[in-house]
Image 1: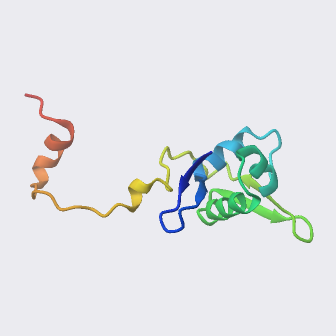
Image 2 (image 1 turned 180 degrees about the horizontal axis):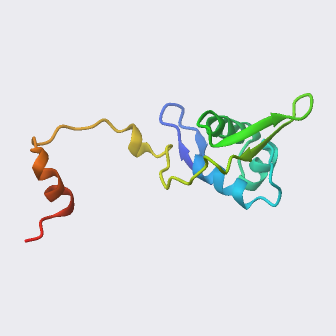
Length: 117
């Protein structure tokens, strides 16, 4: 798990990606996990693991069930959980687009893939 400094506070914060959580769930020996188990596996706080689990649940990638007064188990919904290869937490996705030179629609493939010439 990587750590980086928060620009506002200067304190170190842990970074935990959704893909890392899914990978840890897939590698777990049991079909269900708890936030505490994941936090130990990923070397993060239980709250950080729980927040990522909630995000994955909201995206429909994992399921959850309360099994006691406060205990919650989580599991991967194999019908919908396909690894995207895209890290939604990557700062790249928060960048603002910049305007470049206008391009005609028929030139897009040439620019992206080059010409056959």
